[in-house]
Length: 199
Length: 201
Image (cartoon, rainbow over all chains, first blue to last red; front, side):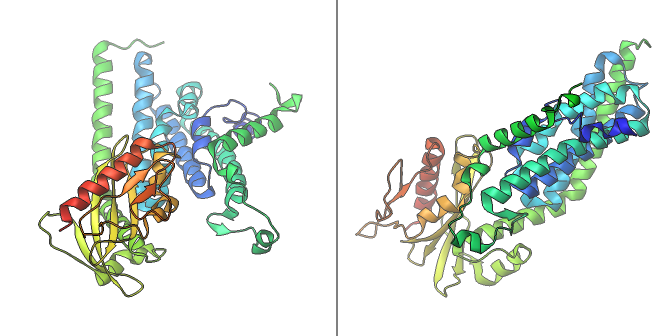
C-alpha cells in the first residue's frame, strides 16, 4: 500500500519529479479551475493506466507510444467534451490546457513506467494516486493564489471587509504567472529541504 | 519479448483508431444538445451584460433576453436586437465580428436608440494570448467603451479610434488600447468600424 502513496509525498509528480509544471502554473490563478483541472488529470491518468494495463500484452512494443497516445487522447477529448457540456464556464477558463493533458508527462510517464508492466488494478490505483499527487499541488497553489490575490476562495469572499478598511490590499502579483512559478518553486524547496526525502 | 508481424501492427492500430473514433463520435452526438444550450445561454449572458443587466443568474439568461430584447431586421442582414435596458431606456444591440491576432474575435455593442452613443460592450475571442490580447474580454477593457460617441457633430458615423497609450477618458471618439496587445487592439478597432458601418444610416 505504501508504495502507492508515494505520489502524494516523496514521489510527488510535480514537486519531486517536476513533471506537469506547465499546466500547474497556468490554471492555478483561482481554486475552481485548479480543482477541475486536477480532477480531469486524475480521471485521464487513472483510466488510461487501466486501459493500457488491460491491453498491455497485445500492444506491439514498436508502436506502444502511438497506442498510449491514442488512449490518452481519447480520454482527454472525452473529458473536454464533458466539461464543455456540464461546466461550460470552467472549460472556458481552462481553454487549451485540457487538450494539453495529452502531452502531460505525468500521464505518459505512468503508462510507460507502470501500466505496461503491471496488472490492471494496481495500475488503476497508481494512476489515481499520481493524478491526486498532481491535484494536491494545484489545489494548494490555487488556494494561496486566489486567497491572497483576490481575497476569495471558489469566488466566495474570505478576507473580511474590515481588513480592507484597515488598509489591506489584494496582492495583484499573486494572480500573475510569475507568482505561480515562485510558489511552486517554494513548495519544491520545502519538500526537498529535508535530505531524508532525497532518494 | 513477443514478436509482432507488420500486418498485426497495422490491423491493431487501425482497429484501435476505428473504435476510438466511433466512441468519440457517439459522445459528441450525445452531448450536442447540452453544448448548444450552453452556447445559447453564453450568448444571452453576453448581450445582457453589454446592456447593463446583472447577468449573475446565468440559468435564467435566455428567458430574460427573450423578454427584454427582440430581433431587429436590417438591410445588412446583421444580427441586431431592440433591447430595453435596466434603467428603462431603449437601446440597440449589434453583433460585431472581426479578426484578432490568432483567430476570430466577436462581441455585442449596445447603443442608444439613435445609435450615437455606446451604452456597453462585451467582447469574446477564440484564441487570443492569455494575459495580453485575451484581456479584451475583461470588464476592465470593456468598461472603457461606455459613453463613447459614434457620430460626429453632423450626425455622420465616426469610427472609434483605439489608441495606444492614449485615448483619454474625456475623448469621446478614442479608447485606450490594451497594452502589449497592439494587433488585437487594432483588430477590435477594425471590427467595430466595419461591422457598425454596415448598420449605420
